[in-house]
Every structure is written in structure tokens, then in C-alpha cells.
Image (tube, rainbow, N blue to C red; front, side, top):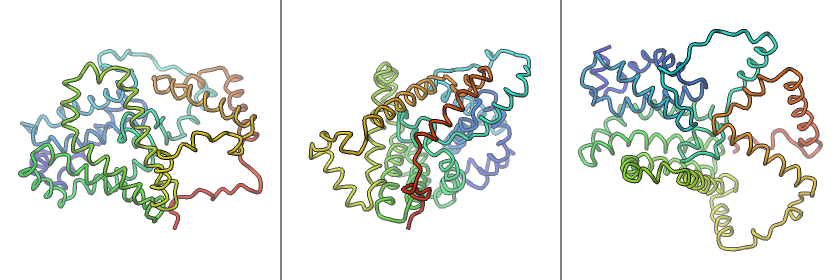
Length: 357
């Protein structure tokens, strides 16, 4: 392993990839001891790999690599827990005996756990990068593993990073592979949605913002250190959520219009003409009953999302209830879908499909 570490420290991406693959099982076990969610574990491991690539040159002795890597990984795990206000220290985890919940409860939990979480409250994100780690997680994971890492760790990008180090500094050189990788990934995501100018521009819009963010991250960190009291406040957290909401929704203009020109004109209309503020629900074809159902659904979704964002496992709480309560909740959900769902001759299951040409 020391030979792989030596080669990776000299900028060999193949050696670094082999080194990380040899440590994958160890990283998973360490992350699993802190995190319970597979998506969170994947995020922590991915962030750890990127930090190791950027800072491997700072490792003084190769024999301490595993300890150094594990420390980075646990810090990333705790960062995820800190965001959810559930900080866990390894020496504080209590030893609890295994409890047999019974066949019915275990079957319910198994059914819930088999549903992979693909959207994790994305509109509570505090940055565009955080948004895309929460939105369409399965697509993001695939792009990360099969496009981002192979590209960012490739030899050409490694050589480009070395060339940039002498001219723009070490911080810029370390961030450059991630910046270029984000532009490539989101350009492909745009094409995946559809090979038209609006989708390509939408992908590049997200990719460029993420690239600039990666390049300016050292400055952000210095600003946060200087204004620690402000950046740690709840008000600043709300500001970051609202800022991300605006940035994301500007991008949706390109996603929803048929051409890039239409997106620009729609944006201009929203900010230049006040007619949109006079739109009423009845003008949109929404009846008073539909409006009440919509309001109840929005409030219910907001309540569940807020509980989840604050570390409350609603699904786990429901799984722990008595059998009649669990079945009542499932029947209510099923009936709501049957009564309020979109059916009939005007409905087409293929009306929304990716990769439209």
C-alpha cells in the first residue's frame, strides 16, 4: 500500500483510484458506525475521497494513511450529523442489546427500508451543491461514480491541475478538477433531460455556479471564520436556504421552457411586469375544493419535512406504532391517491419523460 500512496502523492490518478478502492470496505464500516442512512454514508465517503485527493500531499508518513483517512471520514460523518443537529461522538454510543421486534414490525421496517430515498428535502438546502446532493440522489450518485470521479482523477485533468498550481496557487489547483468535473456532469445532465438549447443551458448554469463555488471555497471559509457568530446564527441559515431557493428557481426557467429564448423572456416578464401578482386560483382552473386540498397537502408536506430536517424520523416513528395505526396510515394514503390522483382519458403516464428529442 505504501507504494500506491507514494505514487498517488506524486499525482498518479490510477494509483489513487486503486488506493481508494482498497480502502472502500474500511471506509464503509467506519461510516456505518456513525451514520444509519446509506445515502449519507455514500456522501461522506465521496467527500472523503475528494479531500484525500486534494490534501494527500500533506500526509507526512505513508504508514499513517489509514488513520489520517479515517479521521477525515469521521469528520465528514459528523458534519452530516451536525447539519441535522444530531452530533454523535464515538465514546458516547451506548451499548444496547439486540431486541426482537417481532415478525410484523420487522417486515414493516424492511418494506420501508427497501424504498431508496431519492429526494431528501432539497428545498431546505443551504447551497446549490447541497441541493443537488438532496435532489434525484440516484442520478447524482451514478454521475458521481461514473463521470465525475473518472474525469476529475484522470491524467489530463491532473496535468492541468499541476500546470495551474504554478500560475494560480495550490488552492486553485486543488479545486480545479472538481470545478471542471461539475461543469461536465451538469452539461450531461442537461442533455439527459433533452438535447435542446434550454436543457443544455440549464445544465451549464448549474455546473458553472458549482464550479465557481468550488474555486472560491477557500475565501468562503476565511469569511466564515471572520464572521463566525453571524454565519452560525439561525437567521443566516434561513438566508442561505432562501438564497439557494432563488438560485434553483432561476434555473427552472430553462428547464420548463421549450427554448432558451423563451426562458429569458419568461424571466423578464416575471421581474418586469406585475401581471403575475394578480393571478387568481380560479383563473388557473383550481376550484375552491381543490385549493383547500392543495393547502392541506402543502401544510402536511411542510410539517413532515420540517420534522425530518430537524432529525425526527417520521417513517421510523410510524413503524414503531401499533399495527392498527400503521395500517390506518397506509389505507389513508392509498385512498388519498385513489381519490385525488390524476386518472382518466386525459392522463398519460408518458407525458413526462427524460431524454426527449
